[in-house]
Image (tube, rainbow, N blue to C red):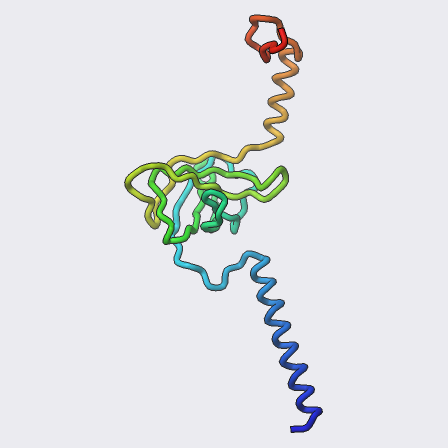
Length: 166
Protein backbone atom coordinates (compact mmCIF):
# COMPACT_ATOMS: atom_id res chain seq x y z
CA UNK A 1 0.00 0.00 0.00
CA UNK A 2 1.35 3.41 -0.90
CA UNK A 3 1.67 6.36 1.44
CA UNK A 4 -1.09 8.13 -0.49
CA UNK A 5 -3.54 5.22 0.05
CA UNK A 6 -2.76 5.09 3.77
CA UNK A 7 -3.41 8.80 4.14
CA UNK A 8 -6.75 8.47 2.35
CA UNK A 9 -7.68 5.50 4.55
CA UNK A 10 -6.76 7.41 7.73
CA UNK A 11 -8.77 10.48 6.66
CA UNK A 12 -11.75 8.27 5.75
CA UNK A 13 -11.62 6.51 9.14
CA UNK A 14 -11.38 9.87 10.92
CA UNK A 15 -14.44 11.18 9.04
CA UNK A 16 -16.47 8.03 9.82
CA UNK A 17 -15.59 8.21 13.55
CA UNK A 18 -16.42 11.92 13.60
CA UNK A 19 -19.81 11.36 11.93
CA UNK A 20 -20.61 8.52 14.34
CA UNK A 21 -19.78 10.79 17.30
CA UNK A 22 -21.91 13.59 15.88
CA UNK A 23 -24.83 11.21 15.33
CA UNK A 24 -24.55 9.94 18.92
CA UNK A 25 -24.52 13.48 20.33
CA UNK A 26 -27.49 14.49 18.18
CA UNK A 27 -29.52 11.52 19.38
CA UNK A 28 -28.60 11.88 23.06
CA UNK A 29 -29.14 15.65 23.22
CA UNK A 30 -32.45 15.29 21.40
CA UNK A 31 -33.64 12.79 24.01
CA UNK A 32 -34.25 10.02 21.50
CA UNK A 33 -33.62 6.56 22.85
CA UNK A 34 -32.46 4.10 20.22
CA UNK A 35 -32.41 1.12 22.54
CA UNK A 36 -35.47 1.58 24.70
CA UNK A 37 -35.45 -0.24 28.01
CA UNK A 38 -38.34 -2.44 29.05
CA UNK A 39 -41.27 -0.12 29.70
CA UNK A 40 -44.79 -0.38 30.99
CA UNK A 41 -47.59 1.94 29.93
CA UNK A 42 -49.59 3.72 32.60
CA UNK A 43 -52.46 6.11 31.95
CA UNK A 44 -53.14 9.38 33.77
CA UNK A 45 -56.05 11.79 33.25
CA UNK A 46 -55.54 15.51 33.88
CA UNK A 47 -57.99 18.42 33.93
CA UNK A 48 -55.25 20.57 32.36
CA UNK A 49 -51.80 19.69 31.05
CA UNK A 50 -50.53 23.22 30.42
CA UNK A 51 -47.53 23.04 28.07
CA UNK A 52 -46.87 19.31 28.54
CA UNK A 53 -45.81 17.69 25.27
CA UNK A 54 -45.38 14.17 23.98
CA UNK A 55 -41.84 13.07 24.80
CA UNK A 56 -41.70 15.05 28.06
CA UNK A 57 -39.83 13.46 30.95
CA UNK A 58 -41.50 11.51 33.76
CA UNK A 59 -39.66 11.76 37.11
CA UNK A 60 -39.75 10.24 40.58
CA UNK A 61 -37.83 12.20 43.23
CA UNK A 62 -36.12 14.19 40.48
CA UNK A 63 -34.85 11.08 38.66
CA UNK A 64 -35.95 10.41 35.07
CA UNK A 65 -37.95 7.15 34.97
CA UNK A 66 -39.82 7.48 31.68
CA UNK A 67 -41.44 9.66 29.04
CA UNK A 68 -44.89 10.88 28.05
CA UNK A 69 -45.77 8.62 25.16
CA UNK A 70 -49.12 10.05 24.04
CA UNK A 71 -51.59 12.84 24.83
CA UNK A 72 -55.18 13.01 23.61
CA UNK A 73 -58.41 14.76 24.54
CA UNK A 74 -61.09 12.49 25.96
CA UNK A 75 -64.36 13.78 27.48
CA UNK A 76 -62.90 17.28 27.94
CA UNK A 77 -59.88 16.01 29.88
CA UNK A 78 -56.32 15.26 28.79
CA UNK A 79 -55.64 11.53 28.74
CA UNK A 80 -51.92 10.74 28.82
CA UNK A 81 -49.97 7.53 28.35
CA UNK A 82 -46.74 7.35 30.32
CA UNK A 83 -43.98 4.89 29.38
CA UNK A 84 -42.26 4.01 32.67
CA UNK A 85 -39.25 1.79 33.37
CA UNK A 86 -40.60 -1.72 33.98
CA UNK A 87 -38.22 -2.35 36.88
CA UNK A 88 -39.74 0.59 38.82
CA UNK A 89 -42.44 -0.59 41.23
CA UNK A 90 -45.07 2.10 41.84
CA UNK A 91 -47.86 1.67 44.40
CA UNK A 92 -51.41 1.93 43.04
CA UNK A 93 -52.04 5.14 45.01
CA UNK A 94 -49.23 7.03 43.25
CA UNK A 95 -50.04 10.69 42.50
CA UNK A 96 -49.12 12.23 39.12
CA UNK A 97 -48.53 16.01 38.93
CA UNK A 98 -47.54 18.25 36.06
CA UNK A 99 -44.63 20.50 37.02
CA UNK A 100 -42.33 22.94 35.27
CA UNK A 101 -38.54 23.10 35.40
CA UNK A 102 -37.96 26.54 36.89
CA UNK A 103 -40.07 29.55 35.98
CA UNK A 104 -39.96 29.20 32.19
CA UNK A 105 -38.67 25.64 31.78
CA UNK A 106 -40.23 22.61 30.16
CA UNK A 107 -43.14 20.76 31.70
CA UNK A 108 -42.72 17.24 33.04
CA UNK A 109 -44.75 14.67 34.99
CA UNK A 110 -43.78 14.11 38.61
CA UNK A 111 -44.84 10.83 40.20
CA UNK A 112 -45.14 10.67 43.99
CA UNK A 113 -45.44 7.05 45.16
CA UNK A 114 -47.97 6.32 47.88
CA UNK A 115 -48.07 3.51 50.42
CA UNK A 116 -50.54 1.02 48.93
CA UNK A 117 -49.66 -2.65 48.99
CA UNK A 118 -50.78 -3.33 45.41
CA UNK A 119 -48.78 -1.87 42.51
CA UNK A 120 -49.48 -0.26 39.16
CA UNK A 121 -49.24 -2.73 36.30
CA UNK A 122 -48.91 -2.40 32.55
CA UNK A 123 -52.08 -0.78 31.20
CA UNK A 124 -53.37 0.50 34.55
CA UNK A 125 -54.29 4.10 35.32
CA UNK A 126 -53.04 6.48 37.98
CA UNK A 127 -56.13 7.47 39.96
CA UNK A 128 -54.94 10.72 41.54
CA UNK A 129 -53.60 13.56 39.40
CA UNK A 130 -52.84 17.24 39.87
CA UNK A 131 -53.18 19.53 36.84
CA UNK A 132 -50.59 21.99 35.62
CA UNK A 133 -50.48 25.30 37.47
CA UNK A 134 -51.04 28.24 35.15
CA UNK A 135 -48.91 31.16 36.32
CA UNK A 136 -51.03 33.72 34.44
CA UNK A 137 -54.22 32.46 36.11
CA UNK A 138 -52.56 32.76 39.52
CA UNK A 139 -51.43 36.32 38.82
CA UNK A 140 -54.89 37.34 37.58
CA UNK A 141 -56.56 35.78 40.61
CA UNK A 142 -54.13 37.52 42.96
CA UNK A 143 -54.66 40.85 41.21
CA UNK A 144 -58.45 40.50 41.34
CA UNK A 145 -58.40 39.48 45.00
CA UNK A 146 -56.24 42.51 45.81
CA UNK A 147 -58.50 44.84 43.84
CA UNK A 148 -61.67 43.58 45.56
CA UNK A 149 -60.17 43.97 49.01
CA UNK A 150 -58.68 47.35 48.22
CA UNK A 151 -55.30 46.13 49.42
CA UNK A 152 -56.10 47.19 53.01
CA UNK A 153 -57.63 45.29 55.87
CA UNK A 154 -58.86 46.39 59.23
CA UNK A 155 -58.53 44.37 62.39
CA UNK A 156 -60.94 41.49 62.68
CA UNK A 157 -62.19 41.51 59.10
CA UNK A 158 -60.36 38.26 58.30
CA UNK A 159 -59.70 39.45 54.76
CA UNK A 160 -56.03 40.23 54.97
CA UNK A 161 -52.80 39.28 56.59
CA UNK A 162 -52.61 39.65 60.37
CA UNK A 163 -50.64 42.61 61.66
CA UNK A 164 -47.51 41.04 63.15
CA UNK A 165 -46.05 44.32 64.38
CA UNK A 166 -48.73 45.49 66.80
